Length: 208
Image (cartoon, rainbow, N blue to C red; front, side, top):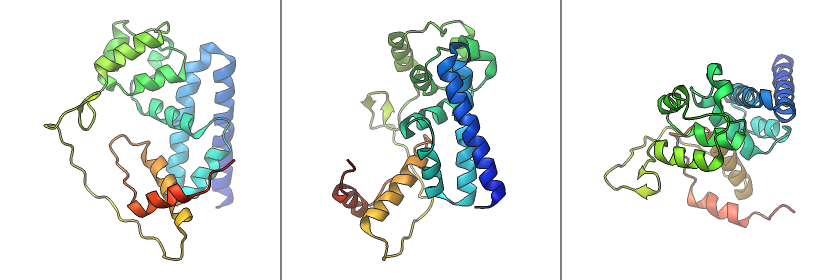
């Protein structure tokens, strides 16, 4: 990694840590900080994707002050165009869990909810659950919670991943885990590991 790239990553890591601290210290800055963290993480993703360095991304995530599962939530929130619109910051509930649930709603529907005052900072989790169940986009199999045979989404194979035969099964499973986590940030992408990788995952010793 070049010194310039390393300097850029350190700056992003520092900005993420600062925004995370502000999120926890000031409720007035909570929503803004959450969106900011998501945007910074997307920049980090772009950096490692351009460098074709998937393991570097995993190492970067390990250095963050929050879990990888939380990092995924931050990304999804920032990718929703309406939530990322700073004009709505003061109208959103100051909770990453609430914002993540709202991020699954179509941006245009979400905008209507904000413009009409249906969504507010006082939105309770029960209200959010009810709202998202009514406005969440259809899943690939149909409506939420009800698979529908008539709606079948077709996928195109985008790439084939070839691995040297000298790479051990556990190492292959670790590689696929990294790719799967990255693919999960794109709602329309489906990552399907081979059966051999599934067996390798099961055979890996658990970390104490």
